[in-house]
Amino acid sequence: MDKNLMIYPFNKRVSAIARYAQLLKGYILTAAVSPKNYGYDGKDVSYIDGGEFVGITITSSFREGLEQCDCILFSASTFLMDMNYYEEKIQEAGNCGKEIWITKELVKDFINAQKSIPTGVKVLGSNPDQLRVSYNDTNTIQEINVPILSLFQVGEFCHGFDTQLLMAERFEKEGYRVSKVSSNTLGALFNVHMVPDYIYDPHMPYEDKIVSFNHFLNSIVEDNQPDILLLEVEEAILPYNNRITNHFGVIPTIISKSAQADVSILSLYYSDYDKEYLDRLRTFCRYALNAEVNYINMTNETMFVKEINYTDPLHYVSVDRDILLNSIGSNFKDYDCMFFHTYDLVSVDAVYRDILCKLSQNEDVVITG
Image (cartoon, rainbow, N blue to C red):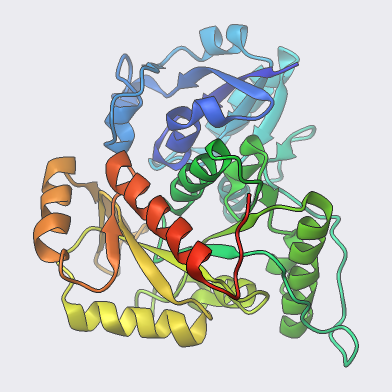
């Protein structure tokens, strides 16, 4: 039986749950709740992500949300929130007998605040028990015998996970068997295979991570016999600057070296990119990530780096959808790579059709359905 799910505090980091609520597996979204001072009360969830109207209203009553749900997902906020407040709300939910989950991002907030994760709380998307393989002459990279669509992005709020869900939905509607793998904590709600925790283990050798993840992917293919594998990497592919390093893009590098992608999508922030910059970025993906970028998803988010004395140096601003689509149509129509926007389903459909055509015409990659 599906469980009734409440999200708190509802914000941009978890908006995909509401936008794609029909794709949830084992859960029904019954409450999207944010503190009243967020200014979201009574607004449709599209107010947060800038996409089309969804029909799910954000409320501010934590108590009413608890009455409607079986389980609650606590999310890291895009606003500054006292961790003591989180502890109070988690305790309140626990006292009501609710199943409690927290996102991986919120785990980091607890650690940074030097606080322990409350007893009985589970981490959404944690995958600790996967087999670790030591690299040697006999344990090397295995061949993945299905087409792989990889999805990379340059930073948070680039909608790589959204794009994965949309592409998977289209393949599945046409009868293709799809396996999905993601490092996005929300994937656990959508029947997505989660990237194993060892990928983030600082003590595990780099080579072992690559080989282990390759074997992990191959086991998914052998167990599920998909027609295509969709591999989404949530972490940024490269640093912003010497101070904001995004861990130097290590996670995407490890994952990309575990399996050769046949088709790749790169998600970027909104900006007036010139051809030279895009060419350099695609060249980086080709040689650093084994990814030939065939499609670029431009999000409706633009990112700014604040001055060095700010606690949170990154600032995000949503761009009007029409401005974004006009920019794509006028600035990038002649570029030798298809541009699209996740919330523009016409362009998503066009990219899906082109991907299907590309894979069908490749003699080395057969997608049959």
